[in-house]
Image (cartoon, rainbow, N blue to C red):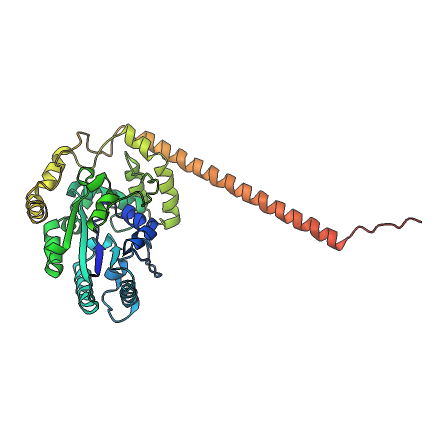
Length: 369
C-alpha cells in the first residue's frame, strides 16, 4: 500500500483551526482507518500545538538535525503503522519564499528516500474577504506588524497582496509536486462536500464523514465588529502595550463586539472598493479556475450591501462608553474573584492556627476521685 503524507498548508482564516481540532479529537477514528494526525513535543512562540506541520517551515534549513530531523524520523516510524499521515499548518502558505523553497526541497528529498508520496491541500478564500478577515484577526490577536496598522495602510501592503496571488503560488508548489498532487478547495459553505468543512476536508484525504466521528460543539469565534476593531487597533499601538494588557483589553472589547457589530453593521471595503480590489485578481483567479475547477467561476462574486466603516461614525461614542464600562465590570469581577481567594486562604490559615494551638496547648483532663 502506498504511503501518503498529506500536507494541509492553509490559507489563513479558512477553517484551519477547526480542521486541526477535528483531527485531534478524532484521532482514534482516523487511526482505525489507517490515518494519523501526530502531535510533536516541541513548541514555537505564538504557534498552537495543533499546527503539527510548523516544524517543516520553521526548521527545514537544518535537515540533518533539530526539530525537522526529529519530526521526519517520527513520521517515518508512523508510516510503519499507518499508510497515511496528515500534517497541517496555515503558516506554510504565508511563509517567505525562501522558507517555502527550503521546506519543499527538504520534504521532497525525504519523500524520495523514505518512499512516500506528498499530497498538498489548500483552501482559498475570496481575496477581499481574506484580507479583511486576516487584518481583523491580526488586530484582535495583537500579533504581527499590522496589529496597529490602519486599514488603508494594510490594504496597500505588498506582502499581503502577494499572498493572494493564488495561481502564482500554486504554480510554484506544482513545480515540486505536480498539479495532480495538489487539492484546491474553496472556503465557501456552498462548495463544501457534505455541507461542512469537516466532511469536505475528509473528502480531500479519501475519507467520508460518518457517525463515528465526533464534532465538538463549535465555539463562536467572536469577531471584532462595529467599532471594536478600531479601539483595539489604537490600543495595540500604545508604547507600553504587552500581552497581559492586550488580553485584558481584548476580553473587554469582545464582550460587546457582537452588539457593536449589530448596531453598526459595516465592512472595511465599500461594495465599489471591493469590486475594484477584486479586479486585480481576475487573471489569477481565472487561471486557478482553469487548472482546478474546469473553468467554473472560482468564487461567488456577490457583495453585502452594507456601508464602509468610517471612523467618525455616530456609534463611536457609545462604543467608547461601552469599552470603559466593560473594563470596569471586568475589574470588578476579577476583584471579587480575588476576594474569594483571599477569604478561602484566610479560612485555611485560621484552621491551621487553631490546629496548632491544640497541639501546643492540649486540654488536660482532671481525674475524679
